[in-house]
Length: 314
Image 1 (cartoon, one colour):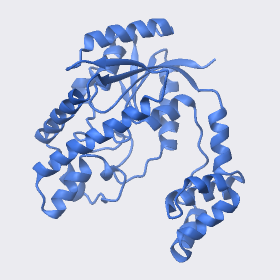
Image 2 (tube, helix red, strand yellow; image 1 turned 45 degrees about the vertical axis):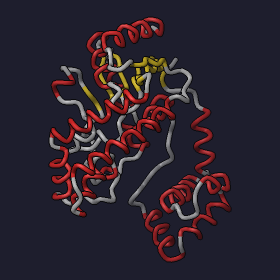
Image 3 (cartoon, helix red, strand yellow; image 1 turned 180 degrees about the vertical axis):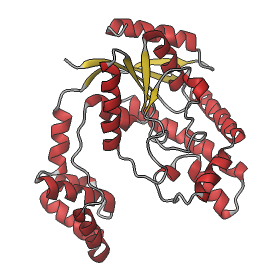
Protein backbone atom coordinates (compact mmCIF):
# COMPACT_ATOMS: atom_id res chain seq x y z
CA UNK A 1 0.00 0.00 0.00
CA UNK A 2 1.30 3.47 -0.89
CA UNK A 3 2.71 5.39 2.05
CA UNK A 4 0.96 8.55 3.18
CA UNK A 5 2.54 11.97 2.95
CA UNK A 6 1.46 15.61 3.03
CA UNK A 7 1.70 18.31 0.37
CA UNK A 8 1.10 22.06 0.62
CA UNK A 9 0.53 23.77 -2.73
CA UNK A 10 -0.80 26.99 -4.22
CA UNK A 11 0.26 30.13 -6.06
CA UNK A 12 3.33 32.18 -5.29
CA UNK A 13 3.26 34.32 -2.14
CA UNK A 14 0.39 32.29 -0.65
CA UNK A 15 2.33 31.26 2.48
CA UNK A 16 3.09 27.63 1.59
CA UNK A 17 6.51 27.49 3.26
CA UNK A 18 5.29 29.00 6.53
CA UNK A 19 2.32 26.63 6.76
CA UNK A 20 4.55 23.66 5.95
CA UNK A 21 6.96 24.65 8.73
CA UNK A 22 4.10 25.18 11.22
CA UNK A 23 2.76 21.70 10.45
CA UNK A 24 6.21 20.12 10.52
CA UNK A 25 6.77 21.49 14.02
CA UNK A 26 3.59 19.79 15.20
CA UNK A 27 3.99 16.38 13.54
CA UNK A 28 7.72 15.60 13.33
CA UNK A 29 7.86 16.59 9.69
CA UNK A 30 10.50 17.65 7.21
CA UNK A 31 9.93 19.87 4.17
CA UNK A 32 10.71 18.79 0.61
CA UNK A 33 10.66 21.85 -1.65
CA UNK A 34 8.80 21.63 -4.96
CA UNK A 35 9.94 24.93 -6.43
CA UNK A 36 11.70 24.83 -9.79
CA UNK A 37 13.84 27.89 -9.00
CA UNK A 38 14.73 27.32 -5.35
CA UNK A 39 16.84 24.38 -6.52
CA UNK A 40 19.50 26.86 -7.72
CA UNK A 41 22.34 28.08 -5.54
CA UNK A 42 22.98 31.82 -5.21
CA UNK A 43 19.36 32.59 -6.07
CA UNK A 44 17.86 33.29 -2.68
CA UNK A 45 16.07 36.63 -2.65
CA UNK A 46 14.24 36.42 -5.97
CA UNK A 47 13.04 32.86 -5.39
CA UNK A 48 11.80 33.62 -1.85
CA UNK A 49 13.99 30.79 -0.57
CA UNK A 50 13.31 30.32 3.16
CA UNK A 51 15.91 31.75 5.47
CA UNK A 52 17.35 29.83 8.41
CA UNK A 53 15.08 31.83 10.70
CA UNK A 54 12.02 30.98 8.63
CA UNK A 55 12.92 27.28 8.65
CA UNK A 56 12.79 27.31 12.49
CA UNK A 57 14.99 24.26 12.77
CA UNK A 58 12.93 22.14 10.36
CA UNK A 59 15.08 20.29 7.79
CA UNK A 60 14.42 21.48 4.23
CA UNK A 61 15.33 19.35 1.23
CA UNK A 62 15.74 20.12 -2.51
CA UNK A 63 17.11 23.60 -1.98
CA UNK A 64 20.46 24.64 -3.51
CA UNK A 65 20.99 21.37 -5.39
CA UNK A 66 22.13 22.85 -8.73
CA UNK A 67 24.25 25.65 -10.10
CA UNK A 68 22.42 28.46 -11.97
CA UNK A 69 23.96 27.50 -15.29
CA UNK A 70 22.79 23.88 -15.07
CA UNK A 71 19.75 22.50 -16.83
CA UNK A 72 17.49 20.81 -14.29
CA UNK A 73 14.72 18.57 -15.61
CA UNK A 74 11.56 17.36 -13.92
CA UNK A 75 12.98 13.84 -14.22
CA UNK A 76 16.02 14.87 -12.19
CA UNK A 77 13.79 16.55 -9.64
CA UNK A 78 11.65 13.45 -9.17
CA UNK A 79 14.68 11.21 -8.79
CA UNK A 80 16.28 13.37 -6.10
CA UNK A 81 13.08 14.39 -4.31
CA UNK A 82 11.87 10.78 -4.14
CA UNK A 83 15.13 9.81 -2.44
CA UNK A 84 14.51 12.57 0.12
CA UNK A 85 10.94 11.44 0.75
CA UNK A 86 11.96 7.80 1.14
CA UNK A 87 14.71 8.74 3.59
CA UNK A 88 12.31 10.85 5.67
CA UNK A 89 9.77 8.01 5.77
CA UNK A 90 12.46 5.49 6.70
CA UNK A 91 13.35 7.63 9.73
CA UNK A 92 9.73 7.64 10.89
CA UNK A 93 9.11 11.29 10.06
CA UNK A 94 6.49 12.94 7.84
CA UNK A 95 7.53 14.29 4.42
CA UNK A 96 5.79 17.58 3.61
CA UNK A 97 6.12 18.45 -0.08
CA UNK A 98 5.71 22.21 -0.35
CA UNK A 99 5.82 24.37 -3.45
CA UNK A 100 4.09 25.90 -6.40
CA UNK A 101 5.63 24.07 -9.35
CA UNK A 102 2.67 21.90 -10.23
CA UNK A 103 4.53 19.61 -12.61
CA UNK A 104 7.10 18.81 -9.93
CA UNK A 105 4.42 18.09 -7.32
CA UNK A 106 2.25 15.95 -9.58
CA UNK A 107 5.15 13.98 -11.02
CA UNK A 108 6.59 13.21 -7.58
CA UNK A 109 3.30 12.20 -5.97
CA UNK A 110 2.09 10.12 -8.89
CA UNK A 111 5.32 8.21 -9.27
CA UNK A 112 5.66 9.17 -12.89
CA UNK A 113 8.73 7.68 -14.55
CA UNK A 114 10.78 9.22 -17.31
CA UNK A 115 12.59 7.70 -20.22
CA UNK A 116 16.40 7.63 -19.94
CA UNK A 117 17.97 11.01 -20.58
CA UNK A 118 21.60 11.37 -21.69
CA UNK A 119 22.19 15.03 -22.65
CA UNK A 120 25.85 14.47 -23.57
CA UNK A 121 25.32 11.28 -25.56
CA UNK A 122 26.64 10.83 -29.12
CA UNK A 123 23.02 10.33 -30.22
CA UNK A 124 22.01 13.76 -28.88
CA UNK A 125 25.00 15.36 -30.62
CA UNK A 126 24.12 13.64 -33.89
CA UNK A 127 20.49 14.74 -33.76
CA UNK A 128 21.54 18.31 -32.99
CA UNK A 129 23.95 18.25 -35.93
CA UNK A 130 21.17 17.04 -38.23
CA UNK A 131 18.88 19.78 -36.94
CA UNK A 132 21.50 22.42 -37.76
CA UNK A 133 22.24 21.03 -41.22
CA UNK A 134 18.83 19.86 -42.43
CA UNK A 135 16.50 21.81 -40.17
CA UNK A 136 14.30 20.79 -37.25
CA UNK A 137 11.34 20.22 -39.58
CA UNK A 138 13.14 17.25 -41.14
CA UNK A 139 13.52 15.68 -37.69
CA UNK A 140 9.89 16.41 -36.92
CA UNK A 141 8.85 14.56 -40.07
CA UNK A 142 10.98 11.62 -38.96
CA UNK A 143 9.28 11.70 -35.57
CA UNK A 144 5.89 11.83 -37.25
CA UNK A 145 6.67 8.60 -39.09
CA UNK A 146 7.41 6.69 -35.85
CA UNK A 147 5.30 8.54 -33.25
CA UNK A 148 2.53 10.56 -34.94
CA UNK A 149 0.82 11.28 -31.61
CA UNK A 150 3.89 12.99 -30.19
CA UNK A 151 4.52 14.86 -33.44
CA UNK A 152 0.95 16.18 -33.42
CA UNK A 153 1.55 17.75 -30.00
CA UNK A 154 4.80 19.47 -31.00
CA UNK A 155 5.56 22.41 -33.23
CA UNK A 156 7.72 21.35 -36.15
CA UNK A 157 10.41 23.83 -35.05
CA UNK A 158 10.49 22.82 -31.39
CA UNK A 159 14.01 21.45 -31.62
CA UNK A 160 14.46 20.53 -27.96
CA UNK A 161 11.30 18.42 -27.65
CA UNK A 162 11.51 16.89 -31.11
CA UNK A 163 15.05 15.70 -30.42
CA UNK A 164 14.00 14.38 -27.02
CA UNK A 165 11.18 12.32 -28.53
CA UNK A 166 13.48 10.86 -31.18
CA UNK A 167 16.09 10.08 -28.51
CA UNK A 168 13.57 8.01 -26.58
CA UNK A 169 12.66 6.08 -29.73
CA UNK A 170 16.23 5.32 -30.74
CA UNK A 171 17.42 4.52 -27.22
CA UNK A 172 14.54 2.33 -26.06
CA UNK A 173 12.70 1.14 -29.15
CA UNK A 174 9.50 2.54 -27.63
CA UNK A 175 7.87 5.85 -28.44
CA UNK A 176 7.68 8.60 -25.88
CA UNK A 177 3.89 8.46 -26.28
CA UNK A 178 3.88 4.80 -25.26
CA UNK A 179 6.19 5.46 -22.34
CA UNK A 180 4.05 8.36 -21.05
CA UNK A 181 0.84 6.34 -21.42
CA UNK A 182 2.27 3.46 -19.39
CA UNK A 183 3.60 5.83 -16.74
CA UNK A 184 0.21 7.52 -16.31
CA UNK A 185 -1.52 4.15 -15.98
CA UNK A 186 0.64 3.10 -13.01
CA UNK A 187 -0.86 3.50 -9.49
CA UNK A 188 0.26 6.56 -7.49
CA UNK A 189 3.53 6.18 -5.59
CA UNK A 190 2.16 7.96 -2.51
CA UNK A 191 -1.18 8.54 -0.85
CA UNK A 192 -1.01 12.28 -0.43
CA UNK A 193 -3.17 14.69 1.50
CA UNK A 194 -2.84 17.89 -0.53
CA UNK A 195 -3.66 21.20 1.14
CA UNK A 196 -4.02 24.21 -1.12
CA UNK A 197 -3.58 27.85 -0.10
CA UNK A 198 -5.09 30.76 -2.02
CA UNK A 199 -6.74 34.12 -1.49
CA UNK A 200 -10.50 34.35 -1.67
CA UNK A 201 -10.26 37.62 -3.63
CA UNK A 202 -7.71 38.13 -6.39
CA UNK A 203 -6.92 41.80 -5.51
CA UNK A 204 -5.70 40.64 -2.09
CA UNK A 205 -3.30 38.21 -3.75
CA UNK A 206 -2.08 40.93 -6.11
CA UNK A 207 -1.44 43.25 -3.17
CA UNK A 208 0.57 40.57 -1.36
CA UNK A 209 2.62 39.90 -4.49
CA UNK A 210 3.34 43.62 -4.88
CA UNK A 211 4.47 43.92 -1.26
CA UNK A 212 6.71 40.89 -1.56
CA UNK A 213 8.31 42.25 -4.73
CA UNK A 214 9.02 45.55 -2.98
CA UNK A 215 10.55 43.60 -0.07
CA UNK A 216 12.76 41.62 -2.46
CA UNK A 217 14.02 44.82 -4.06
CA UNK A 218 14.74 46.30 -0.65
CA UNK A 219 16.57 43.11 0.38
CA UNK A 220 19.01 43.42 -2.52
CA UNK A 221 17.57 41.54 -5.49
CA UNK A 222 19.44 43.86 -7.87
CA UNK A 223 22.73 42.87 -6.31
CA UNK A 224 21.87 39.19 -6.51
CA UNK A 225 21.14 39.46 -10.23
CA UNK A 226 24.27 41.53 -10.83
CA UNK A 227 26.40 38.89 -9.09
CA UNK A 228 25.02 36.18 -11.37
CA UNK A 229 25.76 38.26 -14.47
CA UNK A 230 29.27 39.01 -13.21
CA UNK A 231 29.85 35.29 -12.79
CA UNK A 232 29.00 34.76 -16.43
CA UNK A 233 25.74 32.90 -15.89
CA UNK A 234 24.19 32.96 -19.39
CA UNK A 235 20.94 34.81 -19.92
CA UNK A 236 19.65 31.88 -21.96
CA UNK A 237 19.83 29.32 -19.15
CA UNK A 238 16.66 28.24 -17.35
CA UNK A 239 17.61 29.86 -14.05
CA UNK A 240 17.93 33.32 -15.60
CA UNK A 241 14.46 33.00 -17.10
CA UNK A 242 13.00 33.08 -13.59
CA UNK A 243 10.69 35.97 -12.84
CA UNK A 244 12.68 38.74 -11.21
CA UNK A 245 16.01 37.72 -12.66
CA UNK A 246 15.04 38.01 -16.31
CA UNK A 247 13.48 41.45 -15.94
CA UNK A 248 16.30 42.95 -13.87
CA UNK A 249 19.04 41.43 -16.04
CA UNK A 250 17.43 42.89 -19.14
CA UNK A 251 17.18 46.31 -17.48
CA UNK A 252 20.80 46.21 -16.34
CA UNK A 253 22.12 45.25 -19.75
CA UNK A 254 20.01 47.75 -21.65
CA UNK A 255 20.33 50.69 -19.30
CA UNK A 256 16.73 50.44 -18.14
CA UNK A 257 15.51 51.44 -14.70
CA UNK A 258 15.22 49.11 -11.72
CA UNK A 259 11.89 50.74 -10.87
CA UNK A 260 10.47 49.83 -14.26
CA UNK A 261 11.82 46.29 -13.90
CA UNK A 262 10.17 45.96 -10.49
CA UNK A 263 6.79 46.91 -11.94
CA UNK A 264 7.24 44.33 -14.68
CA UNK A 265 8.16 41.72 -12.05
CA UNK A 266 4.90 42.42 -10.24
CA UNK A 267 2.92 41.99 -13.45
CA UNK A 268 4.69 38.76 -14.46
CA UNK A 269 4.30 37.34 -10.96
CA UNK A 270 0.56 38.01 -10.98
CA UNK A 271 0.27 36.27 -14.34
CA UNK A 272 2.29 33.33 -13.04
CA UNK A 273 0.10 33.05 -9.93
CA UNK A 274 -2.96 32.87 -12.15
CA UNK A 275 -1.41 30.02 -14.15
CA UNK A 276 -0.54 28.19 -10.94
CA UNK A 277 -4.11 28.45 -9.71
CA UNK A 278 -5.41 27.12 -13.01
CA UNK A 279 -3.06 24.13 -12.74
CA UNK A 280 -3.90 23.21 -9.16
CA UNK A 281 -7.64 23.76 -9.43
CA UNK A 282 -7.81 20.88 -11.91
CA UNK A 283 -7.05 18.55 -9.00
CA UNK A 284 -10.33 17.80 -7.28
CA UNK A 285 -8.57 16.12 -4.33
CA UNK A 286 -6.93 19.30 -3.01
CA UNK A 287 -8.34 20.56 0.30
CA UNK A 288 -8.37 24.33 -0.15
CA UNK A 289 -7.91 26.91 2.59
CA UNK A 290 -8.78 30.40 1.39
CA UNK A 291 -7.31 33.48 3.00
CA UNK A 292 -9.36 36.61 3.58
CA UNK A 293 -7.57 39.93 3.15
CA UNK A 294 -4.51 38.67 5.07
CA UNK A 295 -3.33 35.13 5.90
CA UNK A 296 -4.49 33.70 9.23
CA UNK A 297 -1.97 30.96 9.96
CA UNK A 298 -3.40 29.76 13.29
CA UNK A 299 -6.71 29.09 11.50
CA UNK A 300 -4.93 27.36 8.62
CA UNK A 301 -2.95 25.15 11.02
CA UNK A 302 -6.15 24.19 12.83
CA UNK A 303 -7.98 23.32 9.60
CA UNK A 304 -4.96 21.45 8.23
CA UNK A 305 -4.59 19.43 11.43
CA UNK A 306 -8.22 18.37 11.16
CA UNK A 307 -7.64 17.26 7.56
CA UNK A 308 -4.55 15.34 8.67
CA UNK A 309 -6.48 13.57 11.42
CA UNK A 310 -9.15 12.52 8.91
CA UNK A 311 -6.46 11.28 6.56
CA UNK A 312 -4.64 9.33 9.27
CA UNK A 313 -1.45 11.39 9.26
CA UNK A 314 -1.63 12.34 12.97
